[in-house]
Amino acid sequence: MILTITMNPSIDISYPLATFQLDTVNRVTNVRKTAGGKGLNVTRILKQLDTEVVASGLIGGFLGEEIKKDLDENQIPHDFQPISGETRNCIAVLHEGKQTEILESGPVISPKEATQFLQHFQQLAKKADILSISGSLPAGLPVDFYSQMLTVCKEKPVILDCSGDALKAVLKGKVKPKLIKPNTEELADLLGGKVSSNLDELMAALKEPLFEGIEWIVVSMGAQGAFAKHFDTFYRVTIPKIEVVNPVGSGDATVAGLTAAIEAGLSDEAILTQGNVLGMLNAQEATTGRVALAHYQKLADKIQVEKV
Ligand code: ADP
Image 1: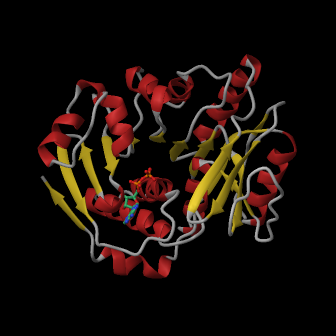
Image 2: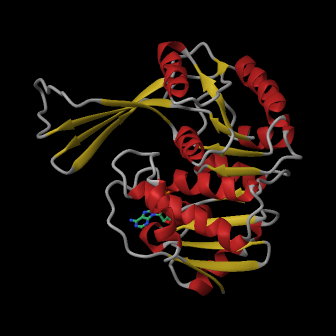
């Protein structure tokens, strides 16, 4: 079983408008609402891949119930820890080819809720073969909370996709995730500078002591594919040019692909191929977290994974 963790989920609302008028009424007919947050995007892709998946994390209030309902409707098993705060809404207004977002910061987690979650998580992790933890931490949790989670499940492989201070704290921690998937911006943020697509520079970046002890580092590079390090082997993943509809959540689809492939014990090349194909399939859809698997093989055949 794959356990996915979303600590700060949301109801993602999209409001498509021909024009966005300020200081007056905007009426929307075509509203779309989905259970969101990076971990839930990963979960939806894993479900489509037909893997056995359980979703967990923190949810509260009316919108928390809506998330459970959404997962039930999609036959996705879940076991969230309830909190007293309200799960958030994240609103995207799609207008004139632009996207204006209004993101609530979400609930504040109390120390007692944090301790309860760690215990709940430890029990759930025992039943999992592999864990996929994605997204930001809600307010109230200490910045090293992901490190604390890694410590209570240290015998299990963890695929961790987070950024900023939460990721920096994990890199300083004793127990390391099996895989991290920074995109180029996140890698640059970690290294405190710019990252080019030059292979020697990427190789040097991933050899930094900061990353010591992490088995897999997959740097996703949008339309340019990916660059990866597995132990001491480096890989360049070249992908074909595709027509992109909506790349939001492609990184989450990649994480789902990598997690399922690692759980299945596939080769390095197959793991990287699966991650990239799913990222591309997500980018080809309007809906985040949806993939047309009928096109899987066609894309997989065009991907090149080379050792460098
Ligand atoms: P994130 O969403 O985390 O920023 P990326 O944008 O790097 O991650 O996307 C993850 C993967 O999805 C890429 O490695 C690639 O395989 C695929 N992908 C994303 N955007 C595109 C694109 N514009 N064209 C082709 N593939 C894409």
